[in-house]
Amino acid sequence: MNNPIQFIEDRREQILQTYQELHKLAEPSWEEQKTSRYLQEKLSAAGLQVKTYTGHYGFIAEIAGKKEGVIALRADMDALVQEVDGTVKANHSCGHDGHSTMALYSALALQDSKFSLQHTIRFIFQPAEEKAEGALQMMEEGVLEDVLFLGGVHVRPHTEVPFGKSAPVILHGSSATLTGVITGTPAHAARPEEGNNPIEAASLLIQSLKQIRLPGNKKYSIKMTELHAGETSNSIPASARFTLDIRAEANETMDALLSKARHIIDSTAKLTETNITCKEEGYSPAATKNDQAVHLAQHAIGSILGKENVAAPCISQGAEDFHFYTWKTPHIPATMIGLGCDLKPGLHHPQMTFNTDALIYGTKILTQLLLNADQGMEENSL
Image (cartoon, rainbow, N blue to C red; front, side, top):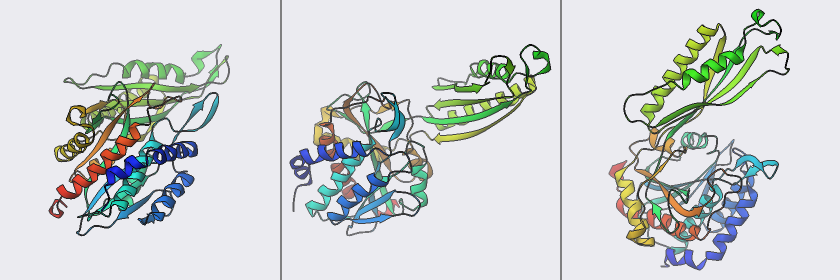
């Protein structure tokens, strides 16, 4: 029987090389063909059972255990599409290439170790996290069937979790996007009384949204982040398009914000005698903390980095579609580990970098987490 943690240490250079190769592949959401094939080939060559699906590039890989029940680890594969040095392209500025690298080598380490696993270990390689759609798709494929525990990981900015430390849970907030169209009446700019200016309606909408107040000490934000109207300087446009970005620390707060936003939109339409239509897009639920899963993660981090390097829960203003898994299946203990890696200047910044040495201890932590969960979870948790 081989030691999986030593396996990871012995393959330090391979892990870093794999990360560089995945970083260069960088593919947008739902287009992760090369990334998926790259990972599948390495997993299949090592003897894992790989299952693919029709219509997208997400897949799972498994190591069979002795008993019923599954211990699962999820990694995301897609990249952002953003402007980098003047060119719009797919770019790994959120660390998904690192997440896939760590999940891959956790799988290879456990497969090589020949451990007598109690449960099947399932590695979920998910598409389209950046669109907040991939987790829902993978759940439709049944990837949570028989799952007793679900783990995940995300690299963290240096301001949240220091290098050499790791947090046992990331408490992301909820996010949502509302896109809308304000339809007014076009007119010549010299005769504004003959028209109904949708830009003025948008201005009232912006000011009204800023007046939203919720009771209690809740953290939230709602703001217009896009507004497009007009093509010429001497005409009142017929319509305006807008986008609202909405954030909340809890799902209940998000529900209240969405309700108030829709009420304000309806009121603005009536006051300005315009027609305003809107639709919700890109919803992600807030994290749900599970004490059992967090406890397993604390022990995994402590055993690899030492107890003094177990960071406090990481509170993030961002969102993550990992939390669809816990939102839809709250009975499954789950947690997303926050990996300190000296990430600068920040997630989604086109020039984002981090200390790739963190991939080594991150892989060890994930591997230890899976082993801990394999020993600590029972079938009656299903």
